[in-house]
Length: 596
Image 1 (cartoon, one colour):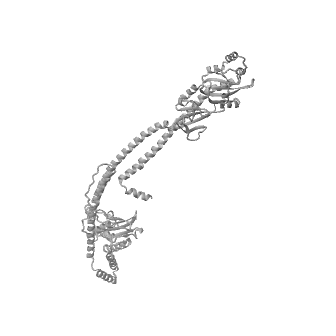
Image 2 (spheres, one colour):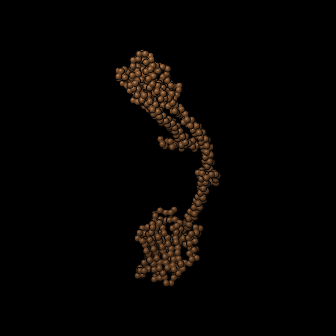
Image 3 (spheres, one colour):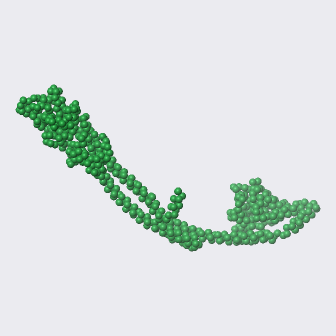
């Protein structure tokens, strides 16, 4: 699967890849981040609103509690007031007595005057001698059938809070309702303390969000929206989207709009029933500003994306145009036009690629020139090798005749008792046989040293005490494979050119060692030496590639063979000083492969 995707991507055009990369790297992440931030922004706004209405509800609960503590305290004081018991249960004989008793008991009026939290107080009592007024009332049949009246009588002094109608003025109030037992008279009454609605609403008016207080029958007893006061939750199209909790937040629809609300179910003063403080906010009102910000941000993002697409299209055309220009020049070079030169401005990667392309074309031209030169030198080397072989073949006289003649001389000398001459002739024949058996392969170092030993013994016979020699060979070097005839000619050169013209003779030393994966060979003499000018001529002759003149298998031959076999750094090294001798050396790697 992965391979198929890679293959598909490789087959797409560069412009398409740029647009895909833009979509993957920019567009999709922006959309994901946008959706995430939008959701988070809305949630943060809703969470902040919930935190705020929680604070609002706590504040309303605290202030409302302080306000409702006043009627609670008044109800407690009146329930233990003996003067109230006397005034409510006394059997009056005349209207004058009733009026005089009312004037003698002004506590209801004084409480209303002193405490703005309440609007009125009344007491329902079963006493036929009492005249109905604003404070003491007879409980008629209609009142006694009210649920709040019956609930109050059924409880033993517990406070109830209900939103009830005051028959005196026809208005509804949040009222404290409490049964009062007059123990001395063994009678009961129902005390009602009306809470000041305006004062209660003023508490809610200070809140930002819509806040209402609802009794147990879903009557709205207070609200900071005047149009909802006195209505029920059903009247304001209150539709819970989920079961309402006793405490905490809930989702509802009010007037067809999704809303959030927070409910605090509260029993002020340990009352029998509860009041609910509800704070509501419309979701639309809270997320309206985030939605506006989101819409503005979306417009900016869309504009930026459109601008980015236009820029990508422009830059992709610019990029692909330069790439196509480069491709055309590559095609020219592929067709054999090595004179093509690419002109692309800029210091970016394509400009760098163009410069590298031009550099590559130049290198190809240079490489072709080098190949041509190398072929020319190779042909010259082959000619030189053929010339060397020709001269070697020309110098070889009939080997059977020569060996037979040398063998006859050796036998003649041996029969006459001239063993030294016989030995020299034998060594000479052995040496010549080895030279004739030399091929293009390699031989072991010890085989080459046998030839060197034969040559030195023959020369020792010739020069007697005028020639001394030393051979030092590292035992580790004996098995090393080397080209044939690369040491004996050097020894011969030292004997002939270094010691032949020296009357008192001299020393020839051959030193062979293995060091640092190299076979190091040094042939030295203490002969007449070579002048600095001659040394320079010899070195020039060795390094001059056009100099094909060589004298049989000489230094020039050895130098070229070493370089051809092991590389240009493995040729002969020459050091000499007039009157002090000459040193010829070379170092070759122990590897078995060849340089060419």
